[in-house]
Length: 299
Ligand code: CP
Ligand code: NVA
Image (cartoon, rainbow, N blue to C red):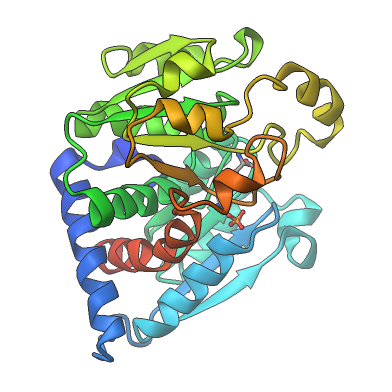
């Protein structure tokens, strides 16, 4: 039997995503009440990080421990992956020992190839294309604070990047509207626009996008791997900072979200990220609870 993978939100249907969000909220309450819940005793998650991480690494490792299992961290440089062992071989070896594999890498085709050769579930911990685990935590945060997201309105302001692509998939799957304001040359990738066209609106005006939004989201202007484009990107994005004026156009009780790490006075001002509408640290904590629900479901 082939395993179920989580390479993109599109690997799950809307009901399953809703159930995972509900379960994550339940697991968070259980943890806070001190209820021990260890369904993954003796199970191991192998984590392969080809890019840096704070939240993803800590949340998966702590999550596995809380569920009764463990996690091992593999960096390409300390393993044969960095010396060019084929992904097909690595996947067969690791999946013959571990019970699940989490991968953070650049090209999305690498996680797809790994999954094709893996006997156990593969979880995407971020690729250049998408960041689906982030969306589970973001949807959970939205639901905890404002209830159902169906029919809601989200403004994405900034780069049409991996996190934006996952928000686009979420908007289609879960029936909310995503208004995307990017500089013209940094729009989301065409395949994500085509797939999600009924759920999104594209424009280049951050103020228009923010109007009447329930949630305003942004992310860094230069993602991992784009460090050499930093100066050029800062110039292109200078009018796309989420500041108090932009937040003032959204609904009065709008939430501000950011997957972190954030760059203050670039994509967001200090006053917004530290302000009363910002829920960025709740989002970060919810990575733990949302991924525990995912691990429980997949493993
Ligand atoms: N948001 C997020 O994925 O953070 P890390 O890069 O720290 O894992
Ligand atoms: N878009 C960012 C997200 C980091 C969590 C990146 O890919 O670097």
